[in-house]
Image 1 (cartoon, helix red, strand yellow):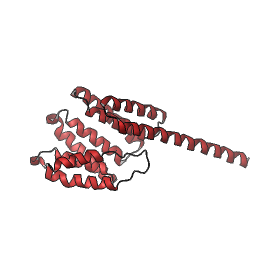
Image 2 (image 1 turned 60 degrees about the vertical axis):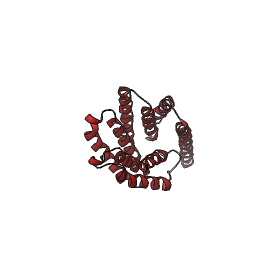
Image 3 (image 1 turned 90 degrees about the horizontal axis):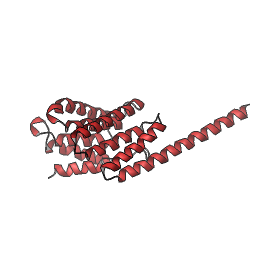
Image 4 (image 1 turned 180 degrees about the vertical axis):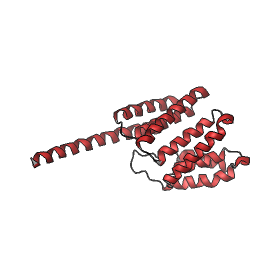
Length: 212
């Protein structure tokens, strides 16, 4: 009986390992395709691919995270503000689902902050004060959760860069934060190939803008 139980556990363990390996390979492949995406349609296709993975792997937060991230990238290419706002709403909804699967996750909170910041641009006069405060709190929380995560520093610095000096922003305020972001990016090593590793190019562009 003990031998049978041991064999059953061994088989179950092997099946779990194979399932895990398949999930990781699928994720890494889709992340690589997302990294190579250039146009809005490519980002939408990537989001759809991650959605299919999320539907199959309902306990995993990463497919939802990348689905949301891909939608954010697609929103950057959307010129129609109504459509852009709808895409960002969907991205935030999906990020919130990921947050429920993995609470207090610096990467997810950073993504929530980024989406919130982007929504300000739809209607700055109406949304600036409320959503600006919300985005700032999310960014600060992301740093608190993981001070070595470079992405919230990138968002913090970018936010300061596009905030007028009379409201506490400007290039002088943004510069040291963006420099810190680049330092963090240079030192950052993701735990594995599935973990978020984006943002350095964005941060470098913002830093270059600061130095002009």
